Length: 576
Image 1 (tube, one colour):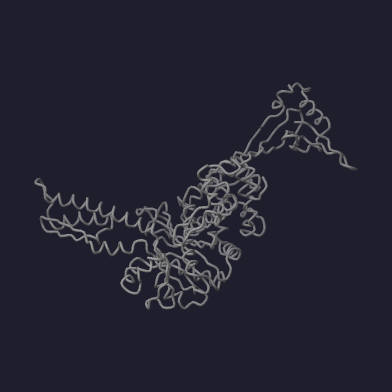
Image 2: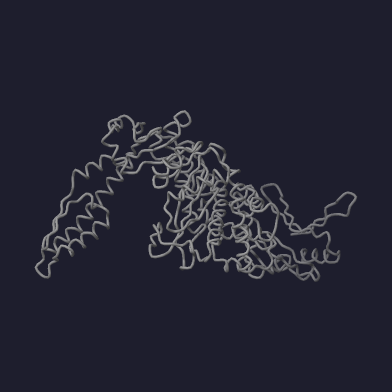
């Protein structure tokens, strides 16, 4: 470390505190601080210290400075840099204000460490902040009430923000994906929290339902919260109306699962709505109804995909697919469930035959049988006979054979014409619905952690869910950029992804398989999960350094990033 005086033509020279190191045959200089404005005697005092003439040994230059504070910075710089790069800050609010900066801080902390509003206030408050987020956003003192006020401010702007996201990511005639989820709710005071179908297997708790709209690449653009007992199809109806009437999207192709885009929704809302098309899948009961009519299973002897027509589905295309791997998996699972059910039924039969205290009574036996049937949902494949003292059961082989014949078969149902979308493209588009499911996994997992939900008013619950969506919006953009360093396929469509049919499972590229097996990139950098990479970036710190020279002001210095961290910032396209 040394002091360098740089001539500056007609102006006074520039005085810099620098350090240097050698890279091969080249000497690389790094400026730590511009000390041109320091008093000359302080500059000379620091020079003497650095040269070992001020009472400090030249071999212990670290003694010339004292680190008075150090804060994590790398993850903050990466997240806030991405927010600014994709323009989310101006989407949230065109001009800077305290509420906007607090919302941005809450989005960042969702990705760094999802916490309650009280914990966030302490994480980003001026006195307790362990990262640089307070200084970068100029937040000053932050209280829990400040965050709730910012959340209310965000709630009022949700429609306008979503309108801008839709304008940026959706175009007329585009494909959009829609799906719902239902996180459980802590407490019993919220007016929109009800008991309903619990995807979290927490039936004893209240829940809310939310539906997310994503573009064709899986980027979230809108989200809406519904009462916890709202059926999936009803949420879809709301989104169809909202995108058309509120956000002005006249032509759009909806993609949703069979529980979302039902026959009733198609008949009542989509079939006669000009500009709206859809892609979904038939339910199992509908597939079984078609199996005895025009669908010829023999066509799969030469192909795993084909189109059929049926009078029950006028002006629609039915694309029949058979996936051999799915067929094997469904057959295996059914056989296991049948055996498990038989073992439990056999125990009930033995209980009726035992000598001591045998199980008796039609009601008592039927109650035990009902529990077993409900456990594995295999009652449709068994005939049971119950009397006051006996119980017997047999498999329905015909029923099992009929279901087995349809294993691996699914039927895509769409209103999109063949001229606009081939059968293969329609199947591929429906299979891409998994991108929305990934969004839900990220929002529910440790990345975003939408749960637990403690808010008591409907407005704040909706704002909380919207904030989580915005956090995933940033995570999605970061994942896209950082894919070469993550356990994700960064060469989709590249060598190794070829497949004989769109029905068969997608293949990972050769580069992705190589990266997954070696756990390092071609450059020798470690491959990580998204959360692990963020944690690694947090090791980049900004330290406050105080020279021991009397009168010298303190200054801040950012630690030098590792090669992995340098690559991450280069991929993100943001500055440290």
